[in-house]
Length: 164
Image (cartoon, rainbow, N blue to C red; front, side, top):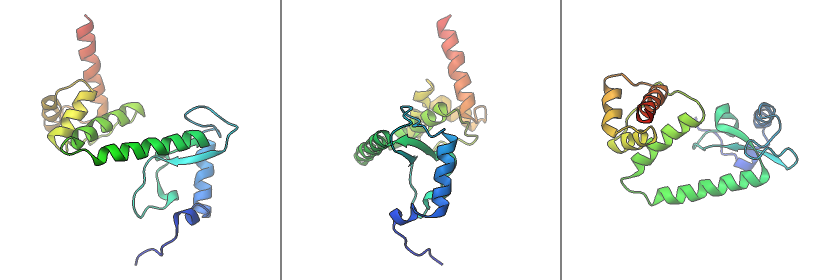
């Protein structure tokens, strides 16, 4: 049975969202995680949206406290990115690979199952970690690099070798 349609603005009044929103703001010490502002109106920003997912159903790591100006700027950046992505053709796999590596490196996560979706994806992922697409594909195929952490170690060892 399908969910009854409820407008998004109405879902934001739901006690489940209000509770989740408060938990995220408490986690972030009631402070904008971008600029540190504590005095401006704060919002809980969804890093992404999925069709059919209610605001309170997103994982905590996809939600962040932002002040009103930073929230508007994040929305504008997302819109600009969406417009740029709409113009991509064959390069979207490379962008996705690079973005996957960037996301994981920035938030100190280790994706145990980085799946190479295409050669372009391997190129983008490899570009971020200063590896060739062939290195990424070979190491993932041979199971010698199954995490982003392993890619970080390989990049660091290559940087040390170049420095010597």
